[in-house]
Image (cartoon, rainbow, N blue to C red; front, side, top):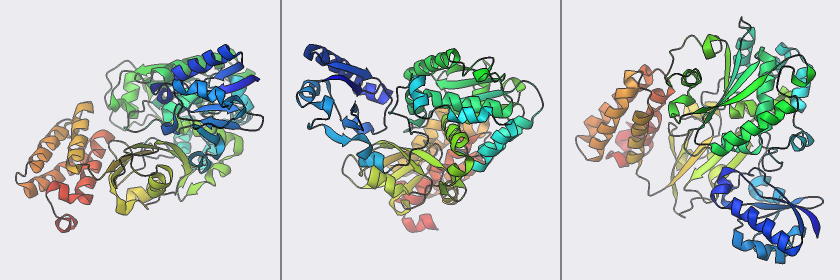
Amino acid sequence: MSGATVYVPRDAAALSVGSEVVAEAIAAEARSRGEDVRIVRNGSRGMLWLEPLVEVALADRRVAYGAVQSGDVAGLFDAGFLTGGDHEKSLGPTEDIPYLAKQERITFARCGVTDPLSIADYTAHGGFAGLQKALGMAPADIVAEVAASGLRGRGGAGFPTGIKWKTVSEAPGETKYICCNADEGDSGTFADRMIMEGDPFLLIEGMIIAGLATGAAEGLIYLRSEYPHAIAVMKRAIDQAQDAGYLGASVLGSGRGFRLEVRTGAGAYICGEETSMLESLEGKRGQIRAKPPLPALEGLFGKPTVVNNVLSFAAVPFILDKGGAAYAALGTGRSLGTQPFQLAGNIKRGGLIELPFGHTLRELIEDFGGGTLSGRPVRAVQVGGPLGAYLPESQFDLPLDYEAFAAQGAMVGHGGVTVFDDTVDMAEQARFAFAFCAIESCGKCTPCRIGSTRGVEVIERIKAGIEAEKNLDLLDDLCETLKDGSLCALGGLTPMPVQSAVRHFPEDFGRSAGSAAA
């Protein structure tokens, strides 16, 4: 056997469980057996419990093996895995694995399939087709296509992307900016990282299109320092795109320029908020700006600025290539397109699941996740990161869309889904929300800075059984103050996990279900 192509992920999740050692073992074993093997370091498919996931390319399909350790490699060669041979680690054709087959991948269609740092591979799988179409369109028509898609911000608020782009496009001034907020700090989220490590040209393409649509000639990716692999991949991909003419003074000879660079954040959660991120990009302390003015009118260095996150920009190439109507045909109500959900916590099969809006939490937890890793019943699920609501089993059939979640005092946010079994102490989780806010607050506004610290103290008194009912009333008042008085969503959303925990799990706060409902 010669000329076999083997895929071994270099995604951070795969590296954390030994994919580098596995790749080295495959190369060494191939040399010792005289086999001609080409190893491609791809991104992750997102089936994290199967990492390292090794794939072998056959004539008509790729066959998967996982989770592979270096000690398995000799046995894989003995079993003829280079030709798809059977082995105890065999998973069959990758695309037929149920976890992957049941998804509808739009944004993540290439992730784990291509070599992340090969422009040839990217274009062979449809990459830059959206950019090619955008180059033949007027800026207003690009904006109209994005608006027609119904794409909304994939960060938290779900603001319509087309409206934001239109505002920047029509704003006066020659200097405008495109800023990608890649400061993915929510617990249990990893979709941004997977795109940047596994399909970086997708983000680059989306940001170039945003520049063409709005008249911005410069883009910046604000990338968290905790993602060293993503930083390295994005910088190399930008250099390659520059060399190939996709970035620079004239994008593909169009006469319209766009340059792009990576800026590294210092690890402040608050910089996930757009104005705090802009302050950091300007070299200042990451603190909230009062709004108005909106960043779309006065953003980076006071210039009109588009601020979207990775998943928003990554959806744009499909929209320009296939049309806004094709994207809008997916989803439900006003929640259109797909959302990459990230399943984490106490879950048997954690990973990334891309589905149209409208599916349910129960499908994610049971059909994809297979229940808890501990084998115990699921008690609570937090959706939307550390500031998201805790939902009980009775709400697992709630459709995953912005409006349905908002109606229940919850949010979809960045799509993070963290699972807890029946051993979780929900009062302690509520305390954690306040403690997290206290640590991560930028300190600019009193409700967030002081209220979060007082919140920790109040919950500690409740947990100690000290005048529980009086302190629960005080807790409600404190939460309303944070919601109404905080300058940004950090303080404004901290009450969401706290109040949902009290509402759905009153027994953990020394209160009966009847009194909680009252």
